[in-house]
Length: 276
Ligand code: DGL
Image (tube, rainbow, N blue to C red; front, side):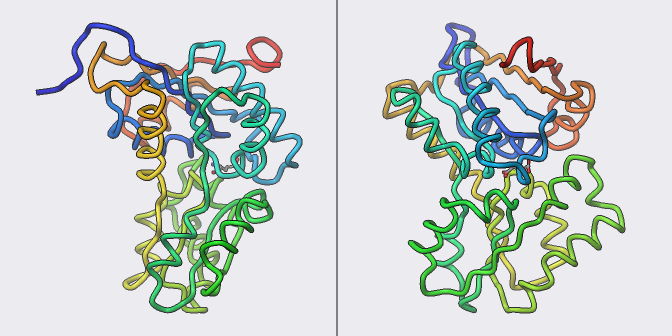
């Protein structure tokens, strides 16, 4: 029997990305923490984050984090590798008492499981050039060859829903070909948009290549953080999730349906009105 019964309202989890990539984390949070309501925000007005400067990304992330805190979020999941690379440490410094969960490139499991000794990392430019990737690779992948490939085209393929077209498949092939040619057998998906490409990537790469999707681990980490703060709930009111975008609500609504199979209204979140 479902353990979620209508009694009280549970701690709200904020989930934030530049776009629909954050929905790969939403999907896992819904499975891992079904009693918690989610407050999702996509900053599609500023997408892609991957080509922006750290200071621009920090400004956007700070505004949305403050908005989420004002809406009652009790933990915020930065469901964006680019935002985590640019802003996680500044957020933690600026709000030392508030819990944040961030994304880290999944270099560790890729390095642990490689048999060829070559791993690939697919991300945005912001992630590939960030300190977080450098330190993670130095710490966990010193003994393997790491091929980092920024793939901003993949973000657009997911945002536009075009990854199943012939052109989309050609882009996937072209981008991952160098790492396959180099013998990579583990490829970390270090951008939250990319798990939605996993079937198409597997088909392109063929047997013997594993794509590492960190989103289930992020949901488990969110559970641990809630638990450590005595905020974890396994039952309570049926959670009322809320979805927002700084872009086009109708378009996001259609993509939520397509990507994670949920029918939900999407609310407009406006820079200058709700966010500053
Ligand atoms: N989903 C974001 C990430 O994980 C990237 C998308 C973008 O470039 O805005 O890095």
